[in-house]
Image 1: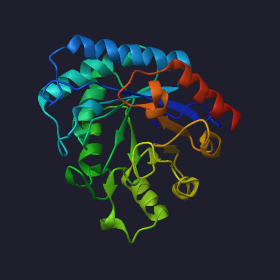
Image 2: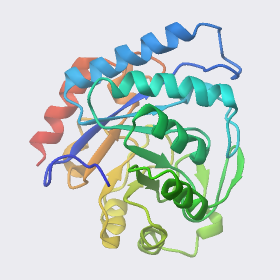
Image 3: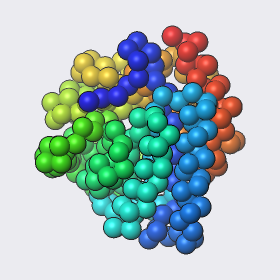
Image 4: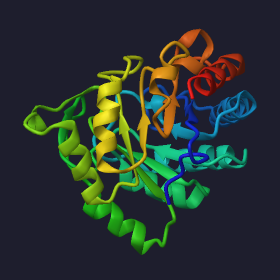
Length: 262
């Protein structure tokens, strides 16, 4: 069930960062503008050579902890459906840790995978304590007969992992595999911070595909291209800012850098 592109080829996964959705502090009342921006970003990612896309409610900050409201689910379902119509495998992430809602969105919108924080093991994020959700999430997936894969963050960025400080990356990766993850994600400490290639190698010992989830740019893409996928957000936007639209020329530059490194 895990999508990671063609065998032996590092996939480029672009991000559609949605504008503030209904119910969030930044909501401006214009749902049509949100959908138009999401579609335009998805088109630019397709044109630039991405292999897959993740839709995320990045504009909804500050985020709720472990859940979102019904209006967020409804809006994200509309936006995700617009992206799936572009024909690429599509993922869903609902911040922060609203993984059950993400599953429902993916099922309704025809998406293919979830990016899941706090799948196995708890951590402290700026929203508070996020606890592991693997048991509940996989039971819900089975009940829905959903062919949707789980891309699980091994150590979520923007979070403190003192709770699991006595566990190595290898042990954490194995724990995620044991709990049923399909793909592992490793990151730097925060958005834009590079991922250590040694962490990538350590996570790979669990025997699952591993994606890099932060800090990728054309300068380091070659060193990270042993990953099954590189998830790129900020770099692919105008001026390297996640708040700006996708720049298809930056997408093309990233695709070239990944291919040159393999």
